[in-house]
Length: 117
Image (cartoon, rainbow, N blue to C red):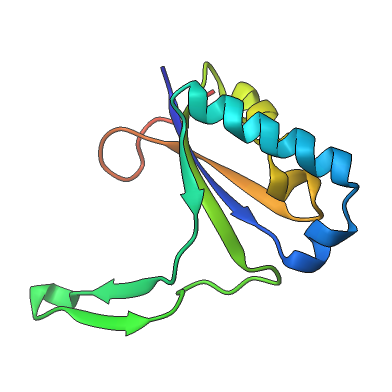
């Protein structure tokens, strides 16, 4: 079964503007995903790792990418298709609370591998 990585972005303002019943339903959906074996969690403080030309490891604090919304969490899900993964992600807290969720197919093999339908 195809594997997908989701990255959720959102902030407290968007969360607070969302109807509490909608938030509660989204958290219940997360609980169902966890019970089904989905690995998910909140985003901690990142570090960047570089080792250009294998000449030595350089570590920098903070995220490499910038976004209008902070990164809030991640999940690793299995779904029959990209559409099924999108449907799962669409009911999560970041998606319903004025945030956004990216769904990335996890491809096997070297860069340029086969896309998941």
